Image 1 (tube, rainbow, N blue to C red):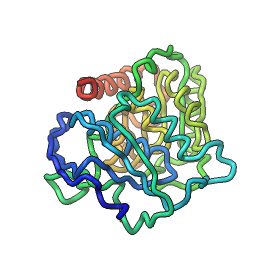
Image 2 (image 1 turned 135 degrees about the vertical axis):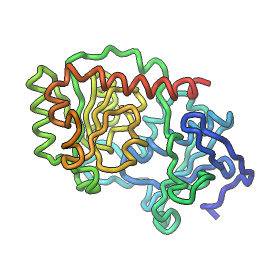
Image 3 (image 1 turned 90 degrees about the vertical axis):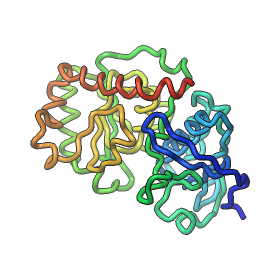
Amino acid sequence: MLFENRHLTAVSFVDPYLNIEWTMKGSDILARGTPGAGDFMYTMSSAIYIANLLKTKINLIFYWDHDALYQHHFEDPESIFEKIDWFYARLHKNHLLSYEHVYDFQVKKMFGSDMTHNIERTDTESGKNITKGLCSWKFKPHLYTHATLLKKVAVWRFKFNAEIPNGWKIRYSNEDWDVAVDSVRSQGYDVIELDYRTPIREAFYHIQTSRFVMGYDGMWHYLARMLYKPTIITGDNNIVQMHDPQAMPFYSPAKDKNRKIGFHDFIADIDNNLHRLDANCKKYISKVDHIIEN
């Protein structure tokens, strides 16, 4: 059957980043296919990180509830499959990863609420399929040599989304984001607004060349993580720390009101706070880059 692993050997290993023990069942990882760019970046990052740890090639199988000609919206400039191909071509050590697609599948029946199968934590029953820590990867080395524009910031927010994200992603409202964007503009920054229809190569370029980026936990956040880009991220969920460990997180107006520096105050004095974004980023790099390069 399509959803069975073709390789029956299982192996347990400890991830040196977060010291979590995992069991990998065979050499196929099964992944839920979704319209979100962040989801396939998450699963592909996890798969290649595991392949690098185990020093073996892994095959990632995406399961989709539609055919190969599907477009989320008829005006979208590229399909999800074109995004995946572009992303894969730029992954560091991508010889360790292959991938394929299974179409017109009953995805919800197979995965339930999980994003992946065949990789599980051995120390917990709750969230055992969430690849915390394993979703840490980077791009090819030459993609880090482009000059950073010191007064450029890339921003993604939900204002232009076709669908409203989960409530925890939007505790900071469109009005809050308007204030934030106006604030950095008033401080002399060139603001590049990205949305879900921005072609992936353009989103990559603008994040790559920005001094820092701002966004909610979703959309293009994995590009920022993998480019080791200083980031301000919003989202009222502990999963933000898993997806965006290099970022400065803000959760919600209610939760952040007692912080020494809140979301708007932090952005209103961004030049004097950039060192904090840089420090978070450097801390993350120091923890994972040597693992990736091993």
